[in-house]
Length: 96
Image (cartoon, rainbow, N blue to C red; front, side, top):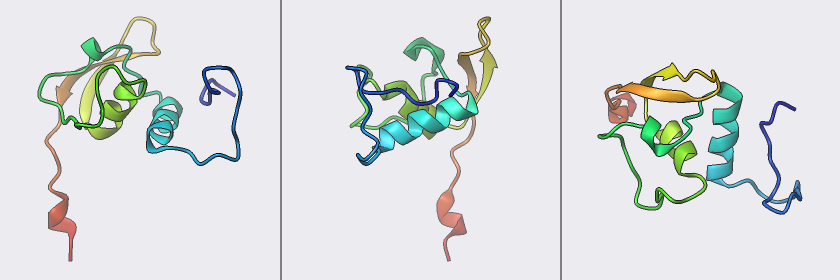
């Protein structure tokens, strides 16, 4: 493994338990290498959710998955810093 999957805070795993949306977003972001390090790496004006508080463990993963953006890699090459937000897609135009 490449660190894509982590266990519970106590180090245990629960493979038979359903995965949450936040856990799925975290996994996909890790696989794609989309990892802001702190909230300072995000931009003002991004889409936010009332049930995604900045102090939640999943905050960065949800923000990363929610917002289309440009980014640059930090010197450590693992983490990213957002450099610009892309326009929000009007998905209703694809509805039939």
